[in-house]
Image (cartoon, rainbow, N blue to C red; front, side, top):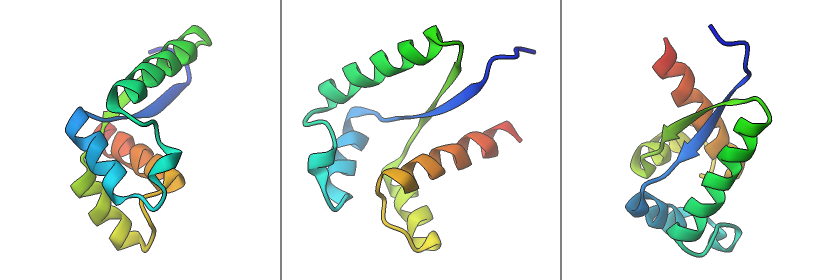
Amino acid sequence: MSNQPVLAFAWYQSDEWYHLKEVVDDPSTLDDTYEEWRNNAESSVAGYRANGYCVDKISIKISELLIWCENKGVKPEGEARAEYTVYLARKRDK
């Protein structure tokens, strides 16, 4: 077992990324294109790994995120997406 800290990282496929941009209140807070997001995400993952983190890419389905957010009474903004990502990681690791 590794002693590396584990980081759950939200991971989107192209169609899910564009769906996300359609449902958030302020899509301007997100990268303009999936390709831009993917490049930035890969760079972030590499940086975390270089700093000793074990990065766990968590695939996000926007339709499921929206149901989760509705049940929690929150909007699918950054903090809620981060919480949902951790929720999925913990659920998968049970």
